[in-house]
Length: 78
Image 1 (tube, rainbow, N blue to C red):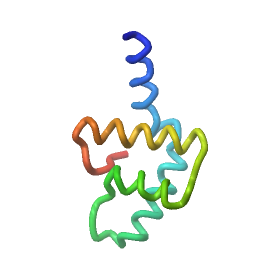
Image 2: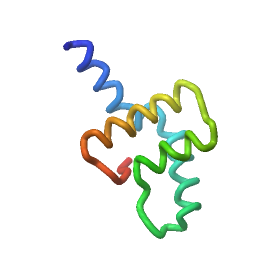
Image 3: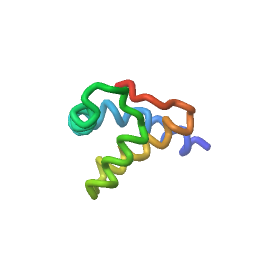
C-alpha cells in the first residue's frame, strides 16, 4: 500500500514536472476550440493519441488525466 501512495503522489506532481509540455498541449487545444469551451482531460488524452505522441512525458500526462477523470473531475485546472 505504501508503494501505491508513492505512485499517486508522483501522478499528482505530473503538472509541475511536465508544465512546459502540458502548456503546449493546452495551447493547441485552446486554438482548436477558439475559447468556445473549457479544456477537458479527455481532450488532452484524445489529442495525444490522435497525434501519435509517445514517450515517458506523454505517458505521465495520460496517467494524470486518467487519475483526474477517476476522481470525477472534468475540466483541466493547471
